[in-house]
Length: 310
Image (cartoon, rainbow, N blue to C red):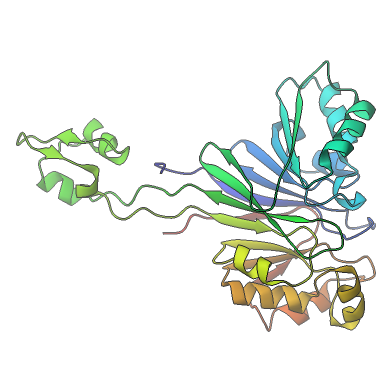
């Protein structure tokens, strides 16, 4: 449990499926946690999308690759090389499904960054988690032609609300003792009695939970994995007019994504990975919103703040 969590925002740098268009680059989504950036997928051209945004690729600490189709990972060697040319020294951690290791061996030769900064990669199994300070990122296998991992960013719970009137009533002096209680330490009151954190703190409050699907067709695993998430970022490659293609290639329609969000009980749904066959996103919005009203369609450089709940 932590006292507080930093601000979190989502930044969509690539929202097209399969290939880039004049308006949309291929898959890349950034979760900004304070000054740290987590990058989910890295399609070709992602380094340029960073340069066109308010974000710095040098602040990326971790990259999570959903699967090894090119529109989700071909941007890695270029991004690593650009980091090297800008004199990065900090390690870069890259995670992904089985097969990532062979790909990274090739990409590291192309980028040739060994003498500048360490690139550490790790293949994740279904259900495996990456632990970090104040949060974890958990993987879950989805329903796609290639092995695809969805990812859930989950924050540690926060301390419950501090009951100041109760603390004063118990004889806790205002000042450092208040903070010590909020940090989980017991203190002595002016009455000479021990006051424990649970005497003045409410129930722990959950942190934020954000789920990124990568590429997937509808499946029960997604509904379970996204249960009660603050934000579900789902691919919506097609609309229902291309239902047969969605079924053939293991992709979502806007309606399927909305129904998954509804069943999972998420707060907000953001649709991305739209097929270049669609000139606008109007059809996606019209199809998804009646099923799940809290739906928005991502476009390149959209930013979304994710507030903490009460």
